[in-house]
Image 1 (cartoon, rainbow, N blue to C red):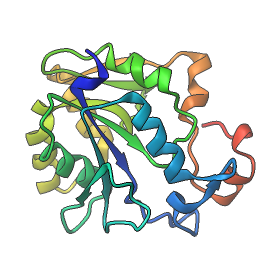
Image 2 (image 1 turned 90 degrees about the vertical axis):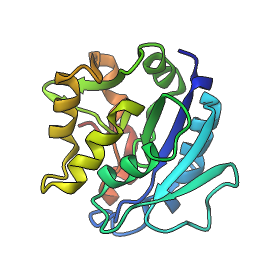
Image 3 (image 1 turned 60 degrees about the vertical axis):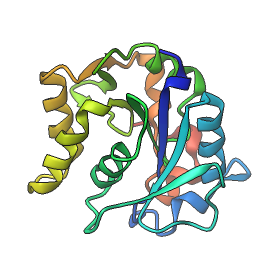
Amino acid sequence: MTTAALSAVLLAGGKSIRMGQDKAAMSFFSEPLWKKQTELLRRIQPKTLFLSAQIDPDWRPADFEFVPDDQPSRGPLSGIAATLGRVSTDHLLVLAIDVPFVSEAYLRRLARQVGKGRGVVPIIGDRAEPLVAIYPLEAKNDFVDALAGDEFSLQPLVRKLMAVGKLQPIDVLEDERLLFRNLNEPQDLARPNLRSR
């Protein structure tokens, strides 16, 4: 699959409680984190670009369509569900605002591994990385059903999607694990090159 056949969403709706400030506006190597991540998604050249958040931020680029979380917000589950309801493509690439080490090459590699009715999710050990993944449109109802329940973690939903063949697990190689470092606390921002998960 070419990336032009994908839609892509940047998830920026987190409350950043541990960080103590809005992650999107933080400076990361001399530029706001939102700018780094939006430029990364632009380079992928998906058909449509979305921004998922609880409110429309003033920094949102004009080429990103705003998708508000359905209320009450259930975190990334809400953002992905709402965006799957808006896409016109068969697949949705999901990228979180706080994983700035993910590369264009890695996202393109993921895109090459999707199939009809099937997306891909990276796996590190026994844990999925659902915020750097590609979901098929066929998963939309699974997200809606999860929102109607009482378990809002993405891990059980991802396991279900893998079990029914809607997601293919992709083992993350040892030298790729650094791509999944995220920024959760102030010390992660102070020493991003030393952070590992």
